Amino acid sequence: MVSANILPVLLLIASNVFMTFAWYGHLKFTDRPLWIVILVSWFIAFFEYCLAVPANRIGSTVYSGAELKAMQEVITLIVFAVFAITYLGERFTINHVIGFSFIALGAFFVFKAPIS
Image 1 (cartoon, rainbow, N blue to C red):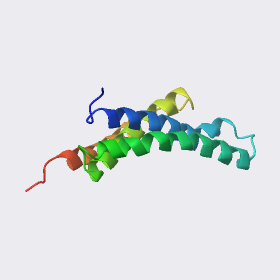
Image 2: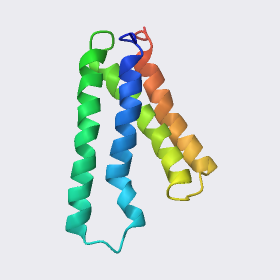
Image 3: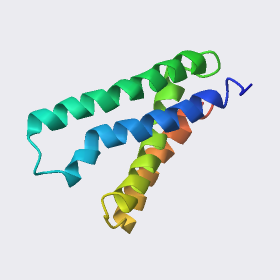
């Protein structure tokens, strides 16, 4: 059995893959009517929720809400960076690295003990 420390991370990674496709996958299909894109995105997002909700429920036994949110944001950035490069064919620049690093730094401080 996967521990309560690791399982939420794995579930959040999987849920973010689904959500990234729900939010951005349609950008390769701009010829499709918007209403179809919305319905398909909702369908994909359903599976994201089926993973994210248990991730947060299980994760809340070992992480605070703030830690879960910070973890989710960093995972989202990593998943999106890979998606943008591999699926959308976008370049990942130093500006992206710097911006995402600042967000990750914020998550680092959420996990640190209170600063006195």
